[in-house]
Each structure stands twice: as C-alpha cells, then as structure tokens.
Length: 157
Image (cartoon, rainbow, N blue to C red; front, top):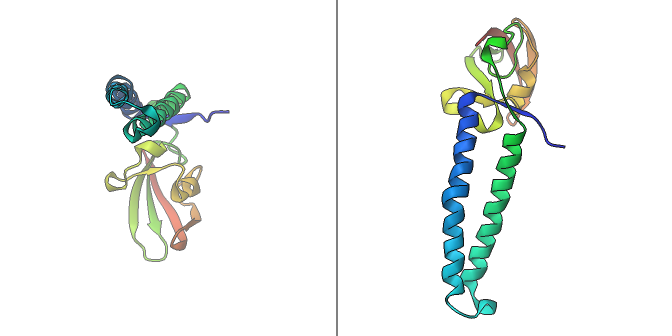
C-alpha cells in the first residue's frame, strides 16, 4: 500500500520535472551506452555492457519509484490550512527551553526539506514532535543529540 504524501505545487512540479528528465534524457543516454557497448563485441566478457545494463536497471527503478510517488501525491491547499495547530506547510516558531533560542521552521514533505531555507520534513524527529501541537504547548523531542524541550510560540502560514 502506497503512502499518500502532501506537496506544495512547486514541490510537485520539481518531481514531475525530474521524471521528465529521467525518461526523456537519461533513458536515451543509457540506451545509447548499451548500444555502444554491444557494438564492441563479445557480451560475456564486456564490462562496459554489464555496467550500462546495471545503470539501466537502476534508472528504471528510480523512474518507477518516482511514478509511484507522483501517483500518490496530493497538493496541499494553503488556504484550507488551520493555523490553530501545527501541520504540513505551517510555519512554527519554537523556543528551545534549554537555551532560550528561538527557531522558525516550515514543515514540508520529505523531498522539499531544506534546512538552509528553514524547511524541515514533517517526517523528521522535530516535525513529528510538533505536528498537532498548539501555541503555548510544551513538547520534549528526541533528536540525535538527546531530548530537547521546546515550546510552541507561534503558528503561521
């Protein structure tokens, strides 16, 4: 059973663009490599041919996985989001209760996560720990560095 994943329109378009690139460009390159290796003679001792066939298998696996993700992708409508609690596409300002540092994160789908731009995966330890919480809630989240107590300061879009 495939998992439904939620994306922004921009994130979904990136996936579609990647699939197009794999199917229209990468696939042709691999087929050309196989043909060139085949032209070099005996296939039983042709490492180039074996490598090209393996690359083709990996590429087809990646294409199939991407198609499955796209088939189960749903676009999140920002106008329908409830900012009374943390959910995907909400921006959350949290305070680390140990050192009083405040951070702001937007919760996004796994493949849209980009820590530099403040986007964390809803499936990350912090993302999972914040989902469903409300302003003022205190939550302890287990991260690789240990358990960190956070307080939810603000939830916006």
